[in-house]
Image: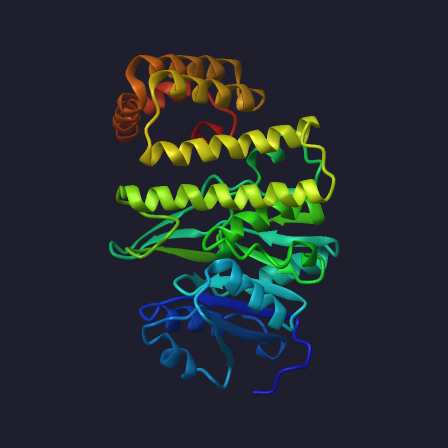
Length: 352
């Protein structure tokens, strides 16, 4: 099939030992309702040791395949962006899939927003072992760049690789990504995107993010080793992003940026608590800091509820409150009662 020398879109698939899933990922790109002549498919294999290379080569007529030594997500994306020919680079991990209208919707948004550096959207969490799909109901479609309004500032982010597409030239100040980011290279991109151009969020689930036993950043069962690695990777991603800000002379003391950095500090703490539970005093400070940061988005009654939650955290401790919250979420009656007595603003009750 003939392809223009300068395709509009590069579908960039980064993969590592995805022999069970890579064919489905490629097929989901081939199934897009977008002209094939305007889209190249580039697979960067980060040194797979399984049958991924053989599977990808079956699609040689439509797929450009590049294999490299194992180096992690950032190194794979760096190579992919260096090799990409499209004006827009839409990313996909080799174990996830796009829905058929993904690229046409993303391309339309970029066409409407010529100064957009990134288009983001929510995705469906796919519990493949149970054949269960859960749509993201918390996604907040930010449109803009720094300085953002308060709600946008506190709700922007948490977008995965499969939910992002970048305008290659506009995103170039972010590349090359720090090679030490084995995972969470997408966190680094999202963290900084609002500083290099306009972010455009569209509130449609256009991809399916697959939960499976080999996930590195998301997993359902408690695993201290994975949890510690995830925390360390997040710390690394945010540290590298802050170095970028320092290098570009951003003042970390200005109010909007200070709030943005505080939010990421709280996420870092939360990720550490999974494998290194805090004492009661530290947990109380964390809950109070969270309340202070997000209080402007909440109703007065919901702020009162969060105050009670902070006190409960001090009285019960981390595990005690977690157990209470789990029981509460499983019972609809207490949830309805809380929403009636202490209404939250939007989806903020579930942020932390």
